[in-house]
Structures are given as C-alpha cells and as structure tokens.
Image: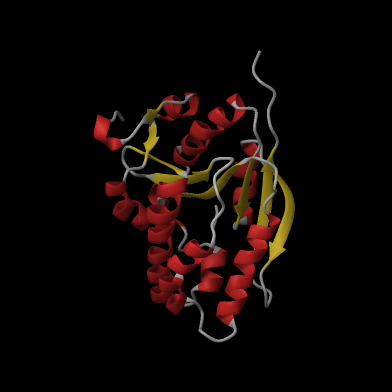
Length: 226
C-alpha cells in the first residue's frame, strides 16, 4: 500500500531539505520508539484508501487490520532492511527500500499471517488478496532503483508540505546517486502529487471483482548536477 524541528542523537539522523526548510519540516530517520505512534498515523492516513477498503471491509475490521499490517511493515520489514523517515512531530512516514536490498520473501509472508483474519473473509478473498500482492511484486522493475513502499501523512496535516518534505529528503539522495525511483499509488487523486515530483504512470494493476486500481509510477534517473 501506497501511497507522505531538531533532533537529539538518540532520535535518529535529521535531514534538512530545501522543501523541508521552506515549510519548516525537518525530516529524520524513524527509530523503534516511534513505531506505535506512526502505526496510528498510517491507519488514519489509509482509512479511506480504496485498496484497504477492498481488502478489509467494515470500519472496525479495516482499522484493526491496518494497524496489524503497518506494525509488521514498519517494525519487521523496513526498519530492519529499508530506510524509514518521519518528521519531528510524527506527522507522516515514508518507507523506502534502497537498491540492492532483498525484496520481501517467505519470512515476510509468514509475518503477515496475523493480518489474515481481518481480510474480507477467509474464503475466496484471501487467495485474491495473495494474488494482488503477487501481481504487485511481479510488476516491480528489475533494474536497480529506490522503491517507495509507503508514504502517509496524518489527515489533519495533509496539504501542509509534510508529504513533499518526506519525498524530497530521499529524492535528493536518489538524484545524487543517479538512480531511478518507483512506487505504486492506490489513489488516482495522488497521481498529480507524485507527478510534481517527477513520477510518471507506466502501468496499472486492477484488483479482482471490479475492485480498485493500482497505478505503477516510475521516476527516471536524473543527470548529475553540474
């Protein structure tokens, strides 16, 4: 699911960017103590997302399922093998996988078992959810790239520059390395936002039974600055 001051030394590495300075957002790395608060931020940010609404039908089931999913994704996948960023006030979170990091494997699927009871039902819906995850993984490009797994901003902080600051902090590094970036967007309304940051739609994945669409977006490598 896709979709986003000052620090002391034990709160992670602070990253200032031009966008962050302009909007007074300073981005830093997430540390384990942040996970509980950021899970709640992500659960709120994705509560109205079409894909979670298709996967977890019913408000109570969806919110509990989202909390389980994001706890696993944050704590056991991206804090262990990726790079995760937030702002000082924990207004949003971005989870990235750098090039060369192993993609999620069977251990990650096993860790998702606690999410299964919250899916739309344990009959045909669970295999369809598994097929969707498989299709998303198969569509991901093989060329080395930075992968934005999740970007979410607390709903009451959206449109204040938090998402742009979280994106820009890593895209500056991506550009300095001369690498492309990739994401899947589960909201059509977010395509223009990602387009402003250089991402272009390269394909779509449609969920079964006339479910929502996922848009695949690629940001080509930029030439090094002179």
